[in-house]
Image (cartoon, rainbow, N blue to C red; front, side):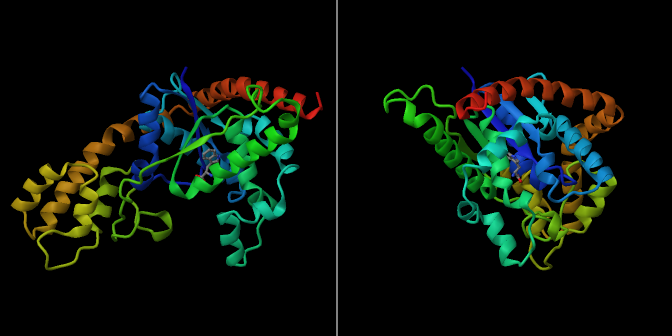
Length: 326
Ligand code: TRP
């Protein structure tokens, strides 16, 4: 039996090569390993905490769907869907809300950070981990591939699963007979941040640092961004150029190139432009083709939603039965 895998991404804007090497590529590898039934979700209801504009929400959702498809997530192999299409997520989140205490949620890193910054946070942001637990637990998920920053959220999902099992099932079965528990406990699979992808200024690549290389950049954009990589004059090897180059070529290949071009920053940047462009081109072309047919993309998401709903609704029936409303 294949293990169940689920992950989600919020539709919040331009994917960059840091996102790709840090997470998206692993999604594709996990899908293609054949070991998992994969569920990849567009977490639009989570994003609603940040994006409160109709046009933007529509556009960003379509953009993320295009990104998913262009990198090689395959609707024939994986279930690709939008969170808001499967109402069981928010319904289960409510059920969990009644089990989870406020002090427990106040320990969440994301909440503490917002509080430390004196931000006024919405109830939705406060409850973020509860909705995420519902996302995960509706699909009998075994594994949740995520970045390090999301580890605590998977712990919340495990705790909530245990609390539910204990409250509604635990007392009715003897300790040995655990097979009719409702939720199994998911495990995180922490994606090795490929040594933290550096941006064009050498710091971690991040939209908030304004140092990204977009994943689907045109050749001109690649040229412009690479020419803007900050170089320290004086050394033979421009460190920031090399650090990014390492994502696209082996160290042996780079040794030849960098030995032959000691101190020639322009030539090295030009070689990097070629390598990035060769890498991005097929994905960029696939994305452009898909973008011409948004109707097809929407129908892929609808089909995914149908399959997700089948699983989630069945699970929700079990849950509703267990709590006594059905
Ligand atoms: N919180 C995740 C993030 O910001 C997105 C997400 C929502 C998610 N639901 C999920 C990830 C369920 C894994 C599983 O990256």
